[in-house]
Length: 319
Image: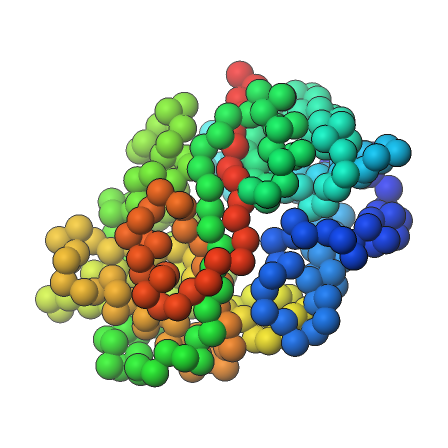
């Protein structure tokens, strides 16, 4: 994409930096950090990465009352899976003006029409009502809220051996992909949108597992009756650790086969993920769950996770 909608990244950063002292809506603002205002450095790095990404376009609005900076990602990976072009909106910065947010988002949607996208999802801070209301004004429909919690993984005392988890063996990948496709949580934002075929959404989770394996992300498994019964895709985000000063791990995607539920395996897998990240030298781990997923909420609460960020997911269809 051509960068025709926003100034270069260094100019954008210079423009929003004076407003960050009173800004409270960034995803990483409340994450534990050794580095004072480390979230600002992470925002700067995310902005630079977005500007350099050929599948991301930046949009910027500035008026007397406020500013808005939006990143629109259109991944070829998503188009290959769904068979049509889709986009993902992230409001990287928005402060002081619903009009600025609305103007910026209007230009995003005009661009989506020109590029023949069929669908756009948006995720913004649940406390950023200027952005939420601007999305509503433009026809976006509410889908779900996501809680992002953080835990000190050094407090987990059990070993991975005690908890019965280990890294995935390569030859078990397709077994784990099958568990992901058949046994995934059925109320995620794609499943909740009736315009997506459930079969295509189910297969998305299997593809996520295969992609994570190709990218050499750690995948933990828990076994039952001689074979893998569940998995957890993990992450070691170097940029987050570098900016905040603590080493972070991430818990990204969990699945447990239906026949193995009710036996404590999910809790063992959950705690095992925290323990494995601790063993890699992580200080903290972050995760995410939908507010309507009460089982996941209980798992997080039981492992002493504390909420640090809430985001709203909304959907928009062009045709």
